[in-house]
Length: 323
Image (cartoon, rainbow, N blue to C red):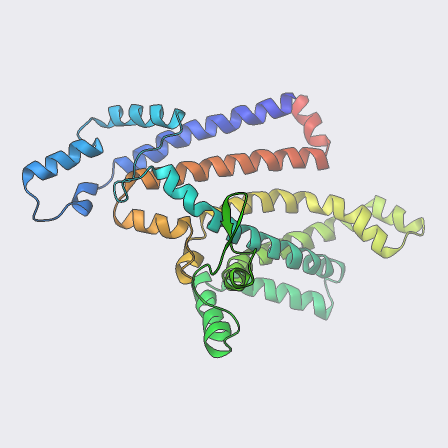
């Protein structure tokens, strides 16, 4: 219990510090009135807009209003859409979440088996080929890979659609693409594009974990007992090899959600990434701040869950915290 409380307190401290940094970083830069009001507007209209947005108040007073609203679940009203910023983000969040989950699932299903194979046969042709592929995954720019996927599979071959989310179906009151054939077809290319870098990362982590674990005494003992190689790998090796993979994947899931902007732009995927780009262009401060704060909370939550899973996989973590 002490371990959980410590992690919760650390997470709350991170959120508090980031609230200050995000607010100052966004609200102290630029003037959204220049972006949102017509150049022909007179001084009275400009002043009325400034007052309506609350920009006539000192920065410290704006910050106190922001904190008060945040504690009540209100991160401001969009200057551009005149809607609550949190609502705008949550309306688009399922699309980004679906894309991120599909990408992480692809990275796990492809990266872990390939990484284990490369770790078991590091000097073989297959192992070297897998590591070469992982280097390409790290090196190729995401936007270029996305355009190549569109050109090959959408334009030249015509197998898959290139833009949009396609037909969706409702589940628990939320629209999802993977529930329909058309939506699933629209999901494949952007998910592959987003998963490429993460798959390469998982391959390297799984290979390194396999190389480290395979030489341990308990693996040698399991083999000496006459256990089959699949049982040694799946039961004895995988549990310990997965500890660093789970840790990194948890944090990487947060980064996939937060930084899917390039993929969403290339494939016109209607997620929060496109909303963020539009908000930055028009200096829509409440939406930018709401996006950043929700991203911070997402990272903190995922980090907390990863710590709990890590502690379950390796009890030494709990003992170390309690000492």
